[in-house]
Image 1 (tube, rainbow, N blue to C red):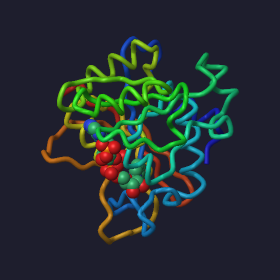
Image 2 (spheres, rainbow, N blue to C red):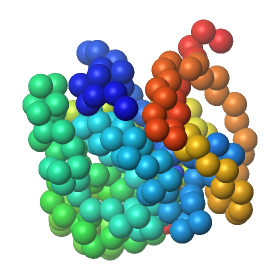
Image 3 (cartoon, protein in one colour):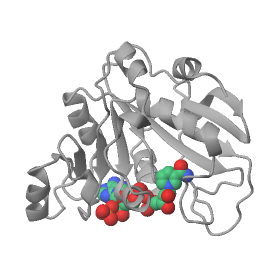
Image 4 (cartoon, rainbow, N blue to C red):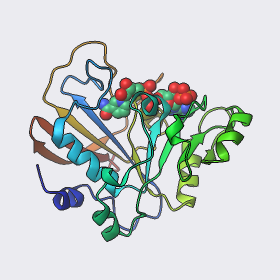
Length: 234
Ligand SMILES: NC(=O)c1ccc[n+]([C@@H]2O[C@H](COP(=O)([O-])OP(=O)(O)OC[C@H]3O[C@@H](n4cnc5c(N)ncnc54)[C@H](OP(=O)(O)O)[C@@H]3O)[C@@H](O)[C@H]2O)c1
């Protein structure tokens, strides 16, 4: 695998961003499964996937995650050991990126109910529970019935959070695709055929088609890392 500084260059966010850039990140089997037999994605990609994942986290202003993934994968606030602090210092980023959990039911894992962590929801969620969480977390309310993504991204930008890394899961990814706010997808294909009932990396009620172009590929140990960027030519 490439060195951390080389990976940081290859995965750099665009320079001088003035509006949010949404990068979604996934690991998938080559036959499109987003989870392994355990129902989680953790060990799918092996060491090279983890190396890339930690570099990607190190480059982000904020990590957006769906509540389903946060609950299934046991999310807590990002730890200093999970990022490259020297890289963040060099890039002038805050020491740690907050987690922004997306939830309608406001069933937030205990560890994420912590100062500096963000909740993204709509006005349709329970106001009493929202107020309770707002005593500790930074709560973004965007949209009346469902989350209005351009508005949620605007509120993240207001906080200076422009480099947005979304770590899934499939339902949240499907919503972001439907809202046409995905600028970049980083998907690592693990050299395994998974079969089975696993979901794929995006899921939603309505199909849509947004053209992307291949921006980069990196061959790792049992892994093909790919980076796709919104195709603005068509
Ligand atoms: N392969 C990979 O790279 C990868 C990455 C991430 C996750 N996964 C796997 O995917 C599985 C979870 O899948 P999932 O589709 O359930 O995950 P998800 O999108 O993380 O979670 C769905 C939940 O998130 C909340 N949510 C998402 N979008 C929302 C929206 N627009 N508005 C309001 N709430 C929203 C809702 O939470 P409430 O119920 O709280 O309202 C919803 O029930 C796990 O097994 C995980 O391991 C795989």
